[in-house]
Structures are given as structure tokens and as C-alpha cells.
Length: 189
Image (cartoon, rainbow, N blue to C red; front, side):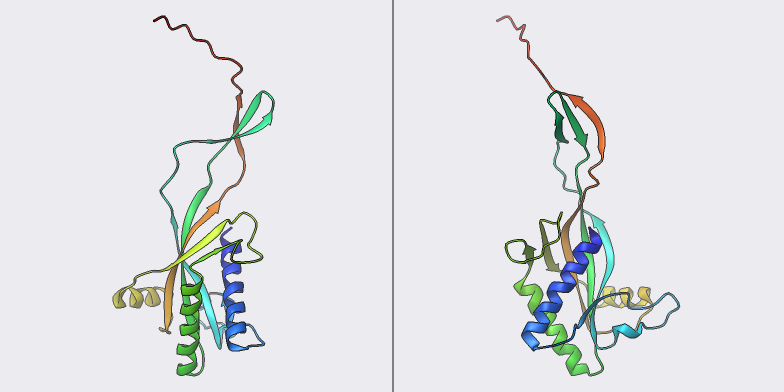
């Protein structure tokens, strides 16, 4: 689901940029900023790069298990889906600084206009993802400097968004539960 959510977000952002700026070529790429050997990926040149920088488990959980009927007298117990929040770094890597700022501005307009993507607002929503929510992650200058240093990259104009509630559900049965056929009440008042 992580990959589907990220690829879909890139696709939607790319289409937004193509429509707004009358572009023929894709300008959004899901990629690392630095390769394992420390070099810059060639394909990142003159692109908006989206990189996954953190995965955080959402801890708000319902208090019940999910049971699915499999026969008249049995239910399958299935673990609840786990939900994750993804921090994504959106950086602009263009030859011209003014073009870099222009594209970053357009990215911010996209996420402001599309803070929620779901089937009612976006065609082609991936199966198993009911919606994606985005909000700007508040990062100080020092935190941003630390992030870029940890990645081993030179700073480029960028912004961090939190993509909320990406669900992961394996759908594996943990056990079978018999159905309740009758209830008895032996209470004497």
C-alpha cells in the first residue's frame, strides 16, 4: 500500500502540473535524492522529487476485532488493519533557481487544493486506499538542515508533507470462531 499511495500521489501531482503549466513531459519523480554511492541520480535533473523520509504507525485504534462470516456457523477472525502516516519530502531540482521556486509554489498549490484525495475527488484511486490526507509538516530550519545532512545531500528548496492514514491489511485469518446459536437466561428476580 505504501508504494501505491506514493505512486498515486506522484501521478496526481504530475497531472496537476501538466494541466496548470501546459507541460508535455512528466516533472514529478518518486526517487531517492542520493544514490547509495553518494552520487546524484541523473533522472532527478529538472524534476520535482518525492522521497519517503519517515513511516510512523498511527496509534489510535478501535477496541474491537474484525470478524468475517465464512460459513453459517463460523466466523474468521482477522487482525485489524494497521494505519501509517508517511512523511514525504517534496524537493524541486531545476537548473534555474526561479524555475525551482515556481515549481515548488505549484506543488504547494496542489496540496492546498487537494488536502484530501479520495474516490469522489480523484479518478483512479488505488484499490484498498479509501483516502489520503495531506498536511504540511512543521519543520524548523535546524530540523530541515539535519534532515538534509542525514540524507547526505546538499539542500534544495523543499517542503515536507505528512500523508495520513495509509492502511495495511494482509487479510490473513488468525482463527475461526463458532457462531452463537442461542442464549439462555437463568436469572431469577
